[in-house]
Every structure is written in structure tokens, then in C-alpha cells.
Length: 353
Image (tube, rainbow, N blue to C red):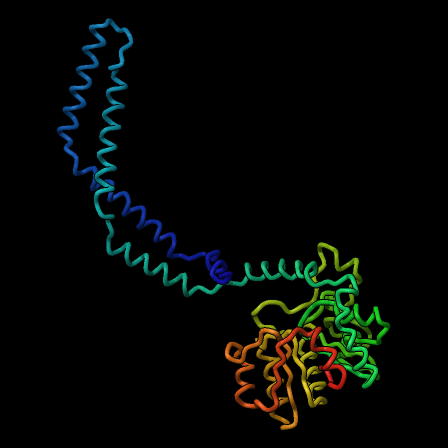
């Protein structure tokens, strides 16, 4: 729908031509309606009205009369105009071949013109800015359901979590529980790689983060060619009206060469290859890039399994889950429950990605 708004703002040369033929059709319809009136009869009526008014004025020696010349002319014009408009309304609209051709040409041309994306971009920018108020978590109590992750982390020491969300839920959970964690964004800004530390949570935010700000045209002695970096914004900066987070948003081209996003996808592929079990929650399987890596991961080893935690998932309605259900049913587990209800059992013995 926004694409159509974009197209409507563009200059369509056929619109002005269409306006001309519409104007011409309307004037010709009025002219045809006017031509059906009896001009001789109208003239006679005007003559009679004028004679009557003049006679009354003379007889009353110039005194004011309701039958004045102005009123007589005005009444007759009103009568004639009413007759014209009734004539127009009772007839079918006049349409010429030229109008039909121009109308079809204008419609076709409007469909063919591509939008320049201006309205889409402005809309997306406003929505991205408003995301801050929606996903920025301030109270640790709101993420307490992640507590079972502590048991898993204490057992295996390392934990990789990949998310498509922009929120700070994992960060606030880790900070409130004194857990070591890293998004790898600092190492990426330094040398272009996402590196997992020796222990703690490795958080891959594949579509960016609310507290990431993209800084363009950075140069250093070691990196003299202008490049982009990610700077971590503090909570006060995030609240700023002019702050714009570095996130991929919307349905258009979720992969972009600017920023860390391609490298994040590669890091996700690498970490995924180290696991034999993938647990998915809160993901609709609508990102074709993520689905492709999951498909490759599953096809590369018959021992790999996937667990989908979603109270509403339905293989008959979700295309990708349906494909998994048909092709690797024995390696697919569906748990129709909320994540907070499933986490205690999953973290007691499972590896969570």
C-alpha cells in the first residue's frame, strides 16, 4: 500500500492530458444540454418579463416594485439554469473515444511507474524510532523468566543465543545476574569479526540492536579506508528524540552490506555448525536467509535435531515448519507452550542456541 502512495507522488504525464479530456467532456455535455433548450421561447419569455416590469415601474412612478427588471432577469436565469442541469442529470455522461483512450493510458501508466521509496523510507524511519519505546526494557523483573539459563551456563560455561529481536532483554538479564556476556560488536568494529569469548553468553543480534548506533566514514591509522563502525549508545542517548538505532527493519531487503549484518549471519552459521540441537522460540520462520542456514545445518548431519517452542505453531499453516514436519519428522519436536514454561526443562539437560 505504501508502494502505491510512492507511485502517486510521481509525475505522471498522462494525468494532465486526462484532466484536459475530462474538462472537454464536461463542457461538451453542458453545451449539448444548453443546445436542447428553445432559445426563441426563452427570448420571448425575457421580453414579456421585461415589458411587465417596465409597465409596473411606470405605473407606480418609479416606486419600488417586486417586479423589478433585475428580479425578472434573475428569476428567468435561475429557471433556465435549472432546466439545463435537469437536462444534464437526465442524460448519460458524454464520453468520447479520446477520453476512453486517455483514461486507460493513465491507469496503465500509473501501474507501470515504480515508486522511488521515499514514503516507504520515511515511514520505516518513524517506525524504527518508535521501536525504542516498545522494546527497550528497563526493569530486570520483566526478564526473570530467563533464570533457567543460569543453570545451563554453569554446566557448559558457554552459551550462544542468536536473536532477530532488537530488545535488550538478554543484556539486562545478564547484568542483573552478574553473568559475562558479549555481542561481539566491539571486536567487529575493531577488526570486522565476531569472536566468542572463553566463557559466558555470546549474543548474536542478527538484525541489530536498539542500543547500536551506526557511525559512517570512520578512519584510523590502522584502517585508513573510510568504513562503518557500531557505537554502543548509553540509556540516555537511546531516549534522545534524534537517536536512530542500527537495525534492519521491514520486509524489504533484510540483508544489507552496510554495517555488521552480513558478518553476523556468517557468525550465526559458524556457531550453528558447532551444535547438534537447535531450539527455536519466538521465530515465525519468515526470514528466508535464516531458514536457508537452518536447512543447510539440518542437511549436513542426520543426527541434528530441532525443537520449536511456540504455543500457536501449526505445521499446516506455517510453510517452513510444514516442510520440516514432512521431511524430517523424527528430528522435529514441537512444544506448544510459552518459552518461560519450556525453559526449565530445556535448560536442565539441553543445549540452547
